[in-house]
Length: 384
Image 1 (cartoon, one colour):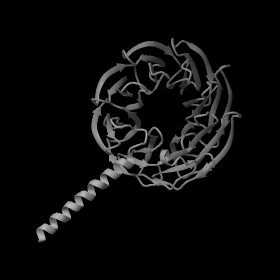
Image 2 (cartoon, one colour):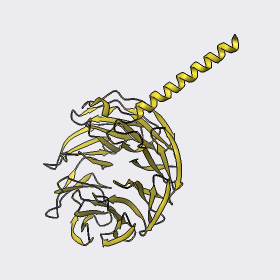
Image 3 (tube, one colour):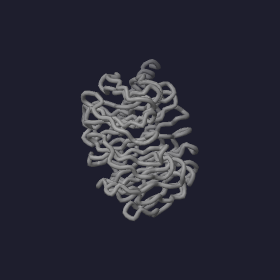
Image 4 (tube, rainbow, N blue to C red):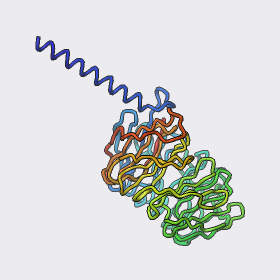
């Protein structure tokens, strides 16, 4: 009788466990993800030169791929089943096939590349080579370098304009931005900026670019049609990250030194609002469906949600020791946050796609903390 009771009890526990796992899996599966499709995250680990491949439905790491020393600039190719990135120490671009989790190409580019961008159609990848002042265009199908151009000293980022006609390059040591023809990489103009220009945001109509300064409390506003500096706008803190609203109407700038979020009106080129957030707000990601900005605070160990329409700051979501890079899956269902201190990836169900709400929903703790490699930094998401 006792053995029979124990058997029934164990059987019941197993059934409940299976149902619980199924419920979590269905809850985490985004509404857009059809049967047969996969949703993966790829995390670049700076200390060990690897990329961790994470199955976001099964909530598990499926591969650790060595890509080279100093992995940086991870980007999911917009049309091909590939993740691209750079080895800043090795001086090459690498291509990871997501089906096999194997490196299928290494393309030498030169010393100290840090960032990579694709053309809007995905046919080209652009790399600024900080060590040589070069900008390269790579054909993503043949993986051959098909154009070379020159920018200023220590180019940081080469950003393709939304219309695919111009490459905008920030030159840190020159305090300039170079404009290059996207096809030939010939120089179209040079525009002065604030000191140590870094990140770039370009309006959807390609009329303006906004460029952060790495060492001053300013952003530079550039007229791309006339190729002139409109203003070095004082924002009250050194910019940490910038996110452009999809319609181009507002620019959101997190600042660790200002401990908050600065909101710039891109039509008037003026600071419109400031929201106090916390100790050290840094990386930000935007959910268009709910008009919510998620901002990592590396000192406080949490992510702060902000409803930009109402300027409402939500309750922080605790995620780890030192959250850095964050991204949302397509549709905004899942928030991913890389933690550089605890070496894991926090997976947070936001329910934004299901709720369709334009306000803040109560924050939820991470669904999972998935171990990755040592000192993770960059993050890319791929559906295939």
